[in-house]
Image (cartoon, rainbow, N blue to C red; front, side, top):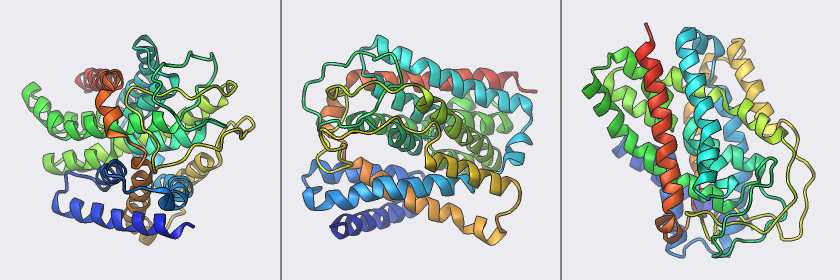
Length: 360
């Protein structure tokens, strides 16, 4: 029965929106993830909620990703100029490529490293949710407390709910810290407002976190446009990742900071199977179509005016559902995944800052 999970999600989203209204620096997405984790770790995300939570974390998430595309106009991104676009693409690409390699050296499962790379380099929790939905492990049983990393199968890594929960915890932690850290470092380095806007958009995880920095610093338009340029890279990165051959299913690894999946998005039923996923997942194709419609001016202005609010609500709902898979005890013990998140966040910040320093 979907109703209990849907009703709980609605209450959580309402709470997240109220908190955001009172404390604008806390985005609804971040509050929703934290609320979901709190509910699960207090034992409140029981079996009655799971069907509704699973529906929200899959169907509602995909709808939110598609609607996010309607907020991105390619001409606006290109108007930033090729040097700024180059900074965004280089910083995002290097961070996404190097983070899994660093994660392997740290002994983390490939799925965890992939999702941390996706969340840090592109757009935080929303990117993690999209990549996890496209690379979800087929036929994986619920994870146990065996934290031995699985070997890299040599193809596209599959991701488990534990991987997603660990990555979500990391991006929420470091993304929230960036709201304070980025303006302070920019002031210490003497960056101009224009440079701060580009750096915030290129280095901070969540769109709402970038908006918080931009609003406080008077660089909102530039910061958000740069950030949406990063979001635009979600589709090609997911497509390239899912185009690699998928490995055969193996016993599920548990990341250093994952979830016990007590009430979040349940894994596929044990013994189930799934063929090779399409090169471009349907919801990612929908995202690209939405970007094209907005870029061609085919979306009416009244629609674009209220779309951000609708997308925020839907994304908060999906991230609340995913947040119920975070096990705080495992996350606290997950030193390696926290270390990877810190290294990846630092890499993105340093590369993008170096690029910003070279801008005219």
